[in-house]
Length: 410
Image (cartoon, rainbow, N blue to C red; front, side, top):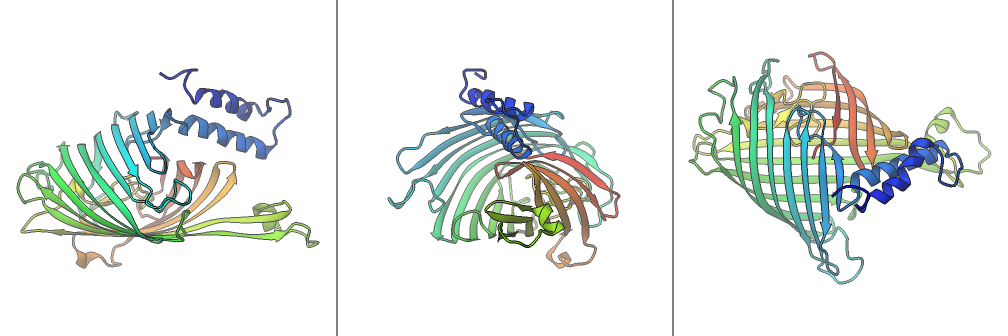
């Protein structure tokens, strides 16, 4: 039961009033830096304390703002980690989701701290979600800017595991049962996947590379191959290869604070003075993604399992932000992005971005003809290391200016 007796209530009552009044419990007025830190601490207490806390998140793109409850329970013994997590959300557009996951992460070596990154991990999970109104624009890189609504509901459950091979590489596998349901609405009857809606078994193998050996990682690479097996026949059985790459570089340097040289205008904007002055010029991130699907014996890829570009995809990943959510859909795609982020004050940050990508109906179309691109500016709100809210304006898409305010997705 939520209320004064819950574990997180004393922290909220202690940390949040000074954040908004600007006055500490001992009576002194908080500086701007102290107040920013107090606001962040308050947000952390409200949105992350266990065992149960409220969450403000989206269920999926086009769901609108949502919220619910999230819980986490630690059953660890000794060096082994055992956690149970559950979440239930509902949005303003009546999208909803319920998830549960149990994680086991045994410690293989009995030296060093109990919780580190170099351990195997095994998950058992289930999810049920109902997305009553999504948009479909047709297939291929030149689909018309005309949306057709449809509903998507799915239950899936399964297990996965990953194992560290070296300090810089993990391999893993997963097995899932998936049962989708589609409310076709006005979708053309020739849309792939509408003739029947089967259940699927989903099998996958994954390799993850990263550097350095412990987080935060400066560079990561993921290689994933999956097979979706049509349990009602073979018409919708397909395979998919996906690789994602990401490289991040902080732009910062330190100088002695006792130097006699006067600071430049740029130093005044980006440097924080102390015994050693830290100059934080922000962070640059480069990302790339490639998806290739393959079919078997005249099968096709159902449209609801095809990757999309435009806005945010169904997994909550920002793609071509200058276009509507799900704007382009096809079995194959590639995407490249460049982002610049800089903390402005406390949890608030500046975002600059450039996106370019393309969907394709076959690997022969994975070229630079008819690529889509955009650029823009935005703002973010970060709690600890997670961006919980982002707002942006994007230009250059050829389909008008796009703007969005989005919560973090489940």
